[in-house]
Every structure is written in structure tokens, then in C-alpha cells.
Length: 65
Image (cartoon, rainbow, N blue to C red):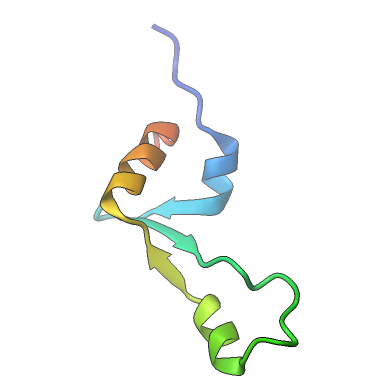
């Protein structure tokens, strides 16, 4: 059986932690920030843990991570 390939798009966007959680960056911080409050921009700079159902889908794309 051949090796499974890692989905490179998913690999660049998320990280699987040692405990198995899937962590990603929040959306909405790239542009149009002049109309957003400083609090909003700071909060979007943090990572967050994906929901369980979504994490399971991502883990199928990252077989060796």
C-alpha cells in the first residue's frame, strides 16, 4: 500500500498539538482593519481550538502530523 499524502493546504493553516487538538488562527485580520477596534484585532491575533467534528475532518487530511 502506498504512503498517504499530506494535504499541503491544511498543513499550512492548522497545527495538531501533542494532545491531539487542532489549532488554527482566527479569520478577519488581513485587511480592512481601520474600522475594527483594537480589542477585535488583538483577539483575532490568537489561535483557537477547532470544534471536535471539524478537527476529525482535518486529521484525515494530515495523516502523519
